[in-house]
Length: 536
Image (tube, rainbow, N blue to C red):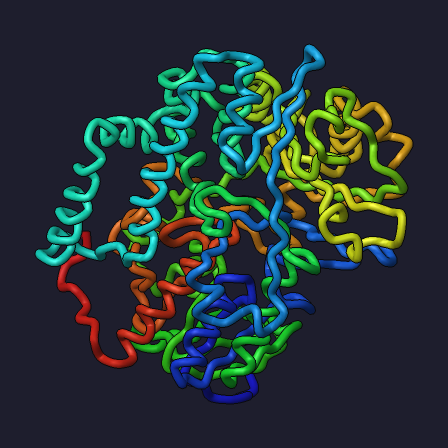
């Protein structure tokens, strides 16, 4: 072990949340070191040149959740950050018809009316309710969950309860949204199977759930937490998703932070129950007053710290933390754009759909989940094919395109085979599924990159490939995320904090966990926090 330096704060992992934390800590005057295992910053929010001239957002692929408050607070525009808005979602159905959802509510209602006039009339009320629910939860995401049920936490909960009460009858529907299945939630609002399938798609994104699974409705709400263009706005980042993390890294450096790549942390150094630094795989050691881990909770607790420094109850809780993933990502280099047979250029006024959902019925989505429950890759996976080069042509050589496909379900562990044997066959199945709606896809493919859950874990550090660092379920939210008693970004090890997606308010390219964790670190450093005597 070689002593390599001393800092006020060390951040383990240069994913987007780690960089947000580092930027805030450095801006507050703390000498901050960021240690990144890979050769580039960004974690799962990166742009990589997968093939010559093709700059691919290999994992996260659209911006929908990163908070405007952080963008403005850290002045990321000054460091090259630029959003490119999109305004439509195209959903083809098996009977040859299709639906396009727009930012313009009136235009969306006109689309819905093709399937149900009643649903078109109900949609504004539905949209209004979701925006009210999102506004309520958006206020909650900036709060640090309580570590104990004391007077202050009780007062905060009563205040939130009073605000929820102002939703009137919508409060009961809000609880359905938090706990029920997305199918049950949508049945209350709509009659059209096409519209219900279009909206139910969101209940399975990134989570090991089907649309009929209790708790799947919350995943819809989680994806409405973005602030650009209002709740649920989607868009691209100039230069790919790595444009965000490059800007965050530049911001952190501008405030004096040091960022080291190819610097894998082997362990957090613990003495007398306190984190005092880290040791790298290469033997270098750095000391610090605080250590902030952007790694997932299980990796932080059990690998970086070690069970020997934790009590038995904590070990049991963290071992029970759910991270089983069925998400996958396949990226394609294309020499042309395959035509969707159901897409109408003249009617939409758009030359090509930028964002697409392939999950035409609720039964389709549920069958994809059913396969995964028994350890099988979905026979017909649900897919989100996206063409970022339509918005940002510089990502690919002239005349070429990138097609990036996120979807489910592909279990981390397979029942009767391995991903080494299955990956190419499954990727072919994904192409076959796209070809049902865009027949020219096979001829357009130049090359492909296949990322199954084990790949997402090995390359990008996503636990079991889980894009949220853990399930978004009612038992893993707010003060229960990641485990009871330690939902406030602190850990049983004094001076060690979590700032990643495995903390409140959860995963996605969000930035809020990193922001909130930095706030708690600064409270402790400045002596404004008193550790409760008794945890939850």
